[in-house]
Image (cartoon, rainbow, N blue to C red; front, side):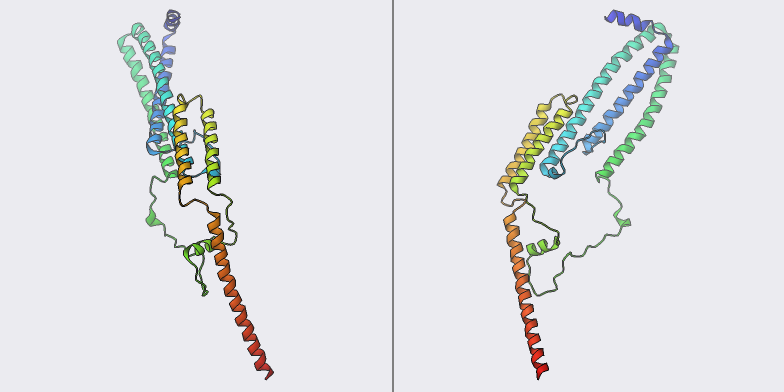
Length: 285
């Protein structure tokens, strides 16, 4: 098989070999640029647009962020590994073509061809580098790694959402509840619901692994890493003395604030009734 392949390659004309060598060299250069881009994404924690990982909006909490970052890093490293494999096969083909040109051409013509190909590859690399650097800068801006000029923007001073002009005394937690506004409803979610969301996250992570099964060579390592992240987050939520959602405490605070307001309103209405009765007696006299 190899001897037959060598005979077919050796029978190719010089322009075809030159064009094939140029095409493989440019392809190798693009793979090297892709490796550089993916390495920069891994280094700075960037998420390129060609990797699409969708996850439920309700699951955007600490464990899901850790799992997503692990997924992105592993997929980027797999892309880098595949690029190195392709470069290795391209190098073998380039070596084969170079040996054919070296035996069939003179040293002067061979140097001229290689120099011409080198200039073309270098020109394409410069254009590709500009595009890649622009992509990296845009991804950094999206991740807020590049600080914006804060002096050119005036910092807006937000006023408190609720101002208490009454004589009713509210503590900080009651004021925090009042600040949420009239449309605020106590979420039915509790620590049990958050744990269920973690289990849903594990299922979605497994579906993502299945989606990228053709890229990932060792999914068990990533699966165990995500399992440890979800397990530690689940234990932290269960053992935490301050759960994320405690409906009983919120209801008690709301009832307490409601009682304060109603008692104050009752006092106000009684005072108004007394004022009306006094005014009526004065008018009768």
